[in-house]
Image 1: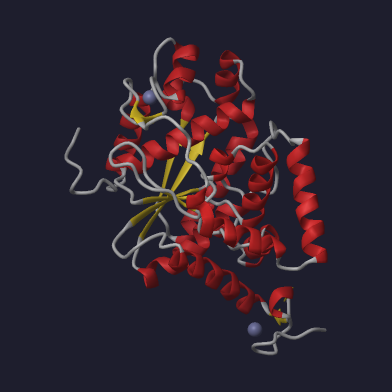
Image 2: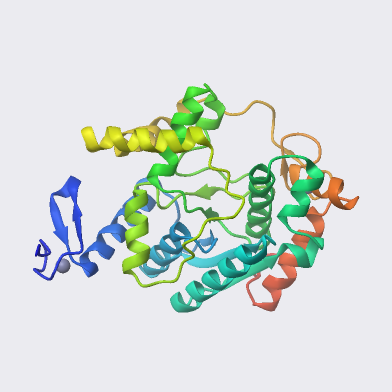
Length: 330
Ligand SMILES: [Zn+2]
Ligand SMILES: [Zn+2]
């Protein structure tokens, strides 16, 4: 049986790029070191800052919250988890339990917003009235609510659980359709637009999908194994993922090279045209006129609900004692 190259304990994994076998403990440290390297290299978060981590209950969010909670002391940032109950039947119930259990085990405060409590409906009903695909509505809603929470909590950054494989696949997909503006959003870090949008960071940028999976398994932390029942397994994305993995098998390191070079050259890609504006209904970021969340909820409920979501998050944050002293606006 293979032994850990560091401590000679039984190995649980082989890290090909380093040609090393690692035991459980050293494997966990190896992944945590990758996350720390990404945070430092891309200047994701500084001392005294507050990070809001989006937690879905899945493997990547488990790895995200666990690695960030281990690094928060040393790097001196504050960590808060954020979960959105999307109202997707049984799946949302299970993912909520996983997210709550995860946060409790790590001792990280978790703010959970239940869409049904604010809107009286979840994603399935919102998607039906908007006549857009489920995953597209769900993506818009999540982006909006996560940003609203970050603004209300006075967070300096929102941490997302995208791993290196996700970035490589989105990059390839956007490249094939020559959507260069979409590529410009795939960096390790995006900027904050004061008062309307909090910058996003991707601490798992250098972590492969299988590393994230193995980390969440080996760390013994809870995560939900099943996928959303509405998952829209877009054929192109599945094929690109397989293609990238085949290339990686033949030329080890090519995936990481793509991702790190992308991060380096992200500024060369054109940003979406049109200026950033404020939604007249809720005051948060929009690309002109009412934001997509306010439009989706207006169609479903007869009025835009962005402001309601902001109020609800603020009330929850106040209950948990998470509002920052400097936040005096009402
Ligand atoms: Zn070891
Ligand atoms: Zn709005």
